[in-house]
Length: 172
Image (cartoon, rainbow, N blue to C red; front, top):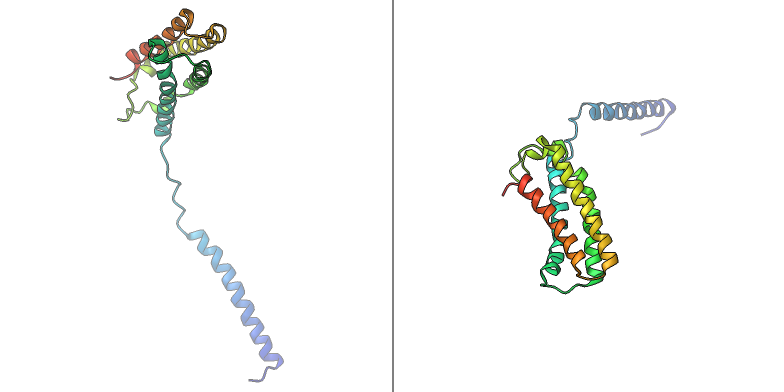
């Protein structure tokens, strides 16, 4: 084939038309495509419940060895006791945000009674007492440095906070 000026012009125009056609078609297709599915994940209610359960699991994991010290089943180890108390103090502060209204949905995987939301003032009071007793235990442990009577009394008070709240606000 012989390429002359008119043939080159026709080829250039055809090529330009092809490029324009493709560039117009792609955005049009993108605009009419089905929207992407939303990212799947747990609902806000489930997320709140899972976070709450995690906090309580960690508090329990830190408290159990302290209970063993209180009962005399485990020797007092200053570093271990202080570490566990510090964890409880930290985790107790997360309880203020662990019961959002969105998590009061009656899901079968929570043992939280609806009373947490209907008697919120009393529940908040119990949480504040737990937080206060956790901090008090931390201070007693810093001054006592052993499984002394003040340490045991302070730890027992914290345990009673757990029991009182569970008795009132947790399904058996």
